[in-house]
Length: 144
Image (cartoon, rainbow, N blue to C red; front, top):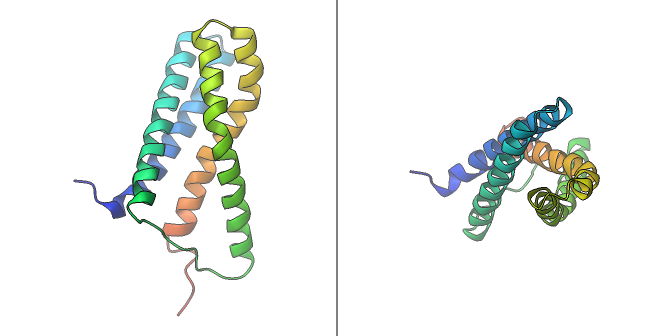
């Protein structure tokens, strides 16, 4: 059974899976494999939705891990974190709109918006894993 302390690992795994699906979907559409692209992108959306539910569950239940490292790595962490948060807030409406255009057959609008949505979504997914690694790997813990 999953416990609260397991959710950051689950969240990082979901972010990593979403990133793989996003890249696979991108490659598929570039190669003209529309069905594979559609499956990858719908699965990426579902994966990101599961991530959001798990993330909110973790935060609402009181899960919080402060970043305690000092020095230049602290500034790097917060630059990544702040850009991740800002873009994560933007990705939900962007992804929903991009997906809606595709499902309604408005491929001209879908393609135009996907050129904005895809790199932001990929950045958010990858930086989610980076943030998890910086917080939970032990690599950046202060020396006692």
